[in-house]
Image (cartoon, rainbow, N blue to C red; front, top):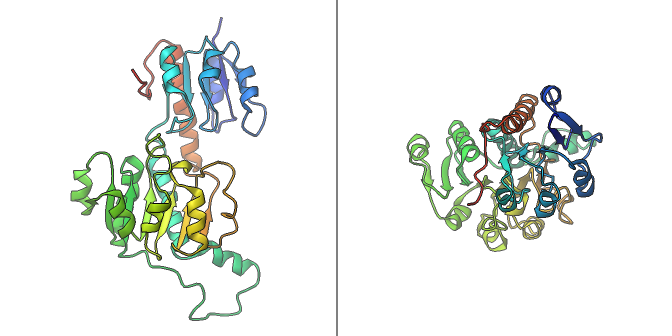
Amino acid sequence: MRDKVLVTRKLPGEAVEGLKKEFEVVLNPHDRDLSYEEMSRMAVGCSGVLSMLSNRIDKGFIEKNPGLKVISNYAVGYNNIDLETASRHGIVVTNTPGVLTETTADLAWALIMACARRIVEADRFMRQGGFTGWAPELFPGEDVYGKTLGIVGMGRIGAAVARRSAGFSMKVTYCSRTPKPELEKELGAQAVELDTLMAGADFVSIHTPLAPETRHLIDRRRIALMKPTAFLINTARGPVVDEAALVEALSRRRIAGAGFDVYEHEPDLHPGLAELPNTVLLPHIGSGSKATRVRMAQMAADNLTAVLAGEAPPNPVKLPE
């Protein structure tokens, strides 16, 4: 009898067709996330789940599905999965690291440029018929060239964002759990404490994973350290930033602006955030190039297939002892 697997969202490319050749595939028929209850019902009897970051796979879900052998997350992050319970039940958890590094770094830079030069505001102004001719004070923004870029979390994506700054002759400061001597040598990057980074950077770009110690890492006190001309960019995880404090700072122009691709209570925004003109808000499209999304799907499928074939997956997540 073939293993049964649940794929919780339609995937780009041919990954699902490949899975169907090996397994009995239960596929989400909707163009939306499954509810927790729907996912629980559809997972009954499954040996594997190919999940999205938006799917909550908690203790209750895992214990109701004792036949689970693998949870293959279609994401780099895995804060949606109860790793401790998965470990206790001998379930292998996998993710898709590396594949979206450059694509997400590109998007972080799109947000930096859009915020600095007020691209979204100017586009809206143009479409609404507001442009009647060039004027010296029409949408003045901030320069990027020669400014200071602060990287919070110098992992793969943070490093890729930092490397792109060389073309803009930027000074790079960073805060990371581990020193990065190769980047310090390559870019002249300087390791600093987080408070120092927040106070000195013109652009603060967040690339840290979500963990208990990073929830609200960028809180009201740290936002208050930023320059009034500085911008906060987040393509990591929404709850790293206290969104209420961010809205307050932006509405009072204590900082110049923010560019976000992720949100604290995603997909909902904190009240008032959408109305602020000094923001660029994207719908979690950091990995959203066609090629990257297809590669992610294939990686997730390969991880799931390997485990159910009794092999080591290419991209296991280290589970707690």
